[in-house]
Amino acid sequence: FTVNNFSGHLDGNEHTIYGLKKPLIANNHGTIENLRIMASFDDDSQNVQGIISQYNDGKILECSVSGTVTGRMGGDGSMGFPSFGGITGPNCLLCGIISGCSSKLKLSLSMAPMKALVGGIAGSNNGTIEKCVSNGSLSVSKKNGDLYPLYVGGIAGQTEKFGSMGGIIKECL
Image 1 (cartoon, one colour):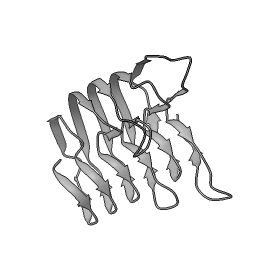
Image 2: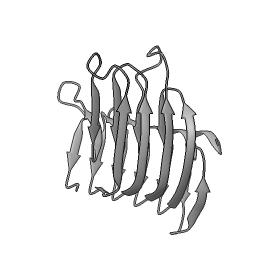
Image 3: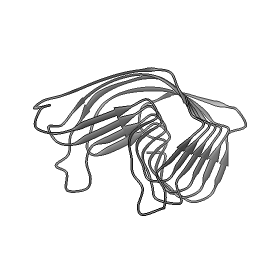
Image 4: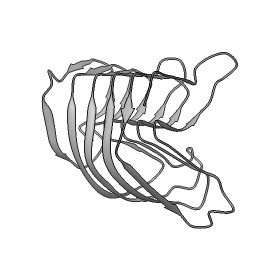
């Protein structure tokens, strides 16, 4: 990872990072904006992945990701279920905001035989995703598919509210 825990402000000024092979940030608690990433992931990973961040409980604004992602996601479910999103794995409750972002990835993943979540923007969403576009291709396979649910979505693999909080997707394509 380039940064393990990020809590600052990163303005990419429309610059592009080419050939990124791992998530840029593990845990985003800050604001990332105006950044373009051309990814080239070919990796086996454990529980969560995203091009910009593995986990987001900050803000990711006006960013775009493109390129290819291939690999296998494993894990044992002890730290959460496998979750992959073009921008972030989980978009976390209340604080996680993704706005004005786009994902144009060619995604081909094999998931572990357990509940799994894959989305063009976020693997799972308990925060807010708005004004985002996902227009790449998603190809996801999983062994023992009948035994465990596989949630795949253009924007988020799964969206969930907690009471009346979070779980918002609006004005997305």
